[in-house]
Image (cartoon, rainbow, N blue to C red; front, side):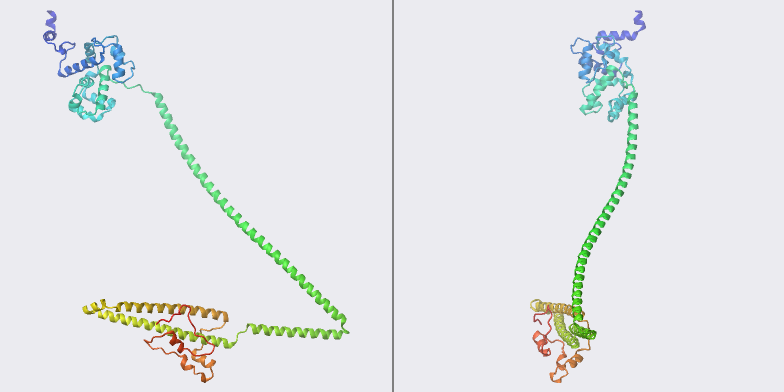
Length: 476
């Protein structure tokens, strides 16, 4: 009675437990909220999964097997934290442990920090905030309550669901996650690695600079070696040229020595001959007279040789006049051909102007379009062009040929006194009647052919009509 007076809530709980089979009234402490009811149901589900033999309690072997197989973790003595001194854990004991756990009292911020730092799924932070998830919500995640993570937390990825379940099981069964102790050895090794890396980079940079300096020095040495090699090649070439010159000098020396020996032998023979003549002379006077006669013969021979040489190298003066006359006649011939080509070109231009005037009217255009006059004009223009090209080629050939003749003869040919003066000089006899025939008056519009040119040329005996190398056809 005293107990009932002191704890009316306990009395109410006992009455509810006797009257209702609700699990919330069968555990201590009882469920006082809807969240506790869901947490208890989740823990009951976890207990059933861990209780393989369904005897109502979780043994050490069952918890170890659950940690390894279902939670996919190594033991790391987690079962000792779960069992402590109790080797047979019931649902009520599991519930008491959860109610006294630090994780049960986690706030929303702590749950969010656990989600970001330990679960490493920060993309669901907004979903947890909207759900107002706190520590009492984690058993529902650990128990994998149907549709809770899919509907309430809006998580669709199966891998993320599995990861959340395992992490929630870890904190619900074994308490808040503990960070591993700080490994100073790893920090020391990291610092040593960083120092070694920096030192290696510095050493590599130093070696790189040294290698660049060494390479530049080596390139300079290589260039010096190449220059030395080129100098050696030049010296070898000079040596070869010197050796060749030496061989040439040796041969010339031998030839000169042989020539000198021949001359000495000839001089000795001549001396012997003179000695014989000298000894055969009766007196000194006869020997002097004989020497004078020999000297006179030598002088006559020298004069004759000099005359022969002058005759062989001198050019008759009349040859210059005849070559100048030939040049002027060829110039007249070229002028005739040039006037003929210009006459062709003028005729073609006149025909083209006529066609142009005809095309200014409609009927003239039709007449020109249906006539063959255009083809004829084109043909005339082409012939005039070909004639001008041939005249130009003939002019170039003539200039080159007479320049070479002047150079070989050594006197001017193209610059002369003119055709009338040359004709009067070379043809003093008026019976030849050449003056009127050597001036070729060519009027405009006159057709000139090779036959007409031949009739216009002077009939000089022994003189051929000059022809250009590229102007042999008889075209108008």
